Image 1 (cartoon, rainbow, N blue to C red):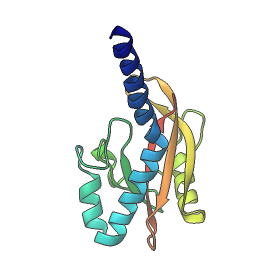
Image 2: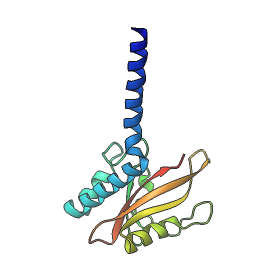
Image 3: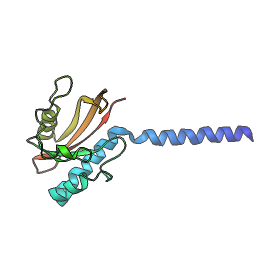
Length: 151
């Protein structure tokens, strides 16, 4: 009986771990970005801004959140830093000098979607590598993005 319990526990643990790893942060960033871009396309800018700005909405999770910006680099919606809404971030650079918003806009304009890698500094001043997925809103001069910290 003891062997059966151990065997069951191992199988169950593998099942849980496998399911947890199946999605992953990259897939989540892509899915949230595509859904947000589709929302803006289908329901309009105001509805998209309202939904994306919700701190506890569907475009925010423990690992990522969606930002909406236009091709001039102006933030239109940001659920975790509302003070950045309306600000032009085109000249923002990471710790290595990379103008990451310029790259976000370039990817959206030229490819429609894709990944941008850059550095991110946490509120407690720790530096991390970040991967951000950018998705153009079809037919619009704006895009959304969602990123995660590379571990």
